[in-house]
Length: 456
Image (cartoon, rainbow, N blue to C red; front, side, top):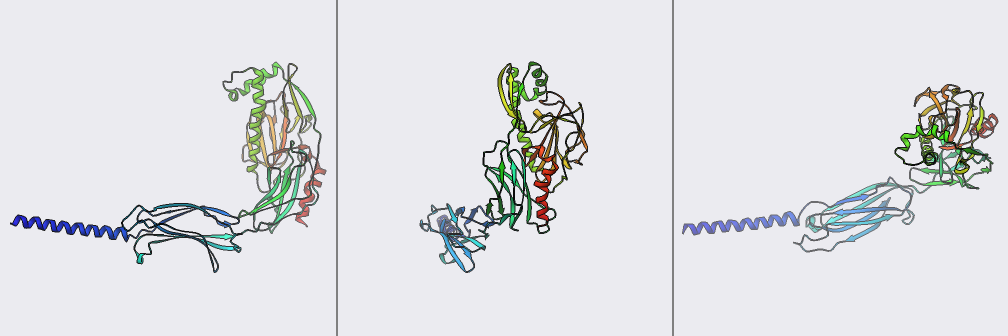
């Protein structure tokens, strides 16, 4: 009898536990308090044009009930996106738990004013808390509407530039511009603040016209503000054609035997004849070296370091000119064609090489076809190259003065005899050094424009 009473008591207690457990599950599940999670990408600081966003809303418990995206500015609140999700039943956990969608905010279509705007995402779930309204999650992101591009105008007036030559334009931007400069077709040349400009709006931009530019390159000034708004404007710039010399280079067996051993690390285990190895060096390695020089443009100082006419190697004869088209022959057959991107100067063997102008060493190493090479940065995108050296007297990062001996001539790399390969680059683009050796050219094309900006 007592045993039956104990069994009944256990059953009753078990029933109560089941009921309480079910009630607990009901209360913790149906009335759960976990809010949905909201993820929005990207999160721009500025809104300057139609902006695409991706949105992910997640609720792993009762599921999503409603989603609303609005834009608020001042007293206006504009609905961008609104969606309601179906109810799957009080005890059904198979509702929509994750929702991904893309949407856009267009400041022009929404007629937004310049200034602050808030992006607001609201998401509710199917919890029975708060009178059945569900848990609410809010996401807010503040942006600034800025659709007005920066202003840009030229200060210098007439610009005559040779193909393969250098130019300077002085211009002014509005204070909101964070990046500006000049484009020659697809090549960008950045502008730099003038040291004498206390207001900071005047810029100097050195640029070069590449040797292989089209007949009428597209040249224009360009500026960008923090919001990503861009402006561009043309200016008077006449590009003058130039004729460049040609030369026939005879490649001999003795020359190949002399230079190829120095390129053994580059050639590796290449199983080919000597001419094929030479062509690999003259083409592929030449291109690699050109990219190395071009990449140095980012190491320039924002301040102008150079001053006055540039120095030419003393008592030196010109052995090859800038822009010279070289046709390479082997046993009477033309095997290659390349363009010479500097001036070759020959004096006495192992002559001292002077820094062409004040600057800072940004490269001092063995560099492919150029052998032992030096590059000096002269600020604001200008750099000079000294190649085929036998010795280097300076180190990267070292400041040098115009006329200082920085190395000695030699015949390293692809040189056939002792000489100096001298080059000048503007924004990484090789240009004709002859212009920078000319005091009249510097006065008319550079200094007068800088003086105009300083004393408008």
